[in-house]
Image 1 (cartoon, helix red, strand yellow):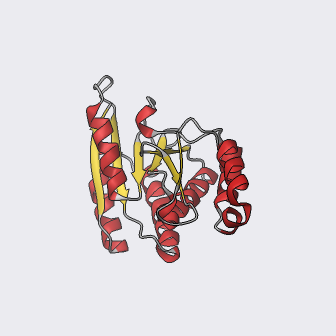
Image 2 (image 1 turned 45 degrees about the vertical axis):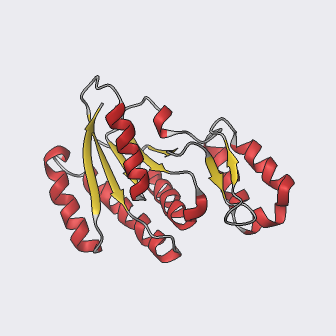
Length: 198
């Protein structure tokens, strides 16, 4: 089912740092539960917070986490240590060499979860623009997570619980709508859901 073929997409802008933290926390939690989780960006560049909101650090997706880390240490080690960006990059470089862009990935997934409607739209646009080959379905679900610590924590738990429930369904294709409706009622938040095909 979704084990060994699950993806989570984010926009790779940490302006929404709490949402990103929720997604990272959920990825770690799902990984510990046996899910194969991949993390992607959907933007054209990787944007990390800079010294001011209108001055982000912008990198190409070919830039390694090590290069980003060294660049930020050179620019202002104290600032980027204090805001947690160096810690995040240090953790990320132990997981993979560089960020990955969803639109460049040709692997097929059963489930893609986004944490922001804009990212959900970007994922759908990309999947719908691809030539259909295998007709394998992929469920794309958006769980909007607001940019604050409490919402990020609740969102991470909600996504983890959702993935575990999906894993235990007998027929994901036929049970997904009912499952999402239950989660909407339970969480008092809307879920977006679309099925695309590879």
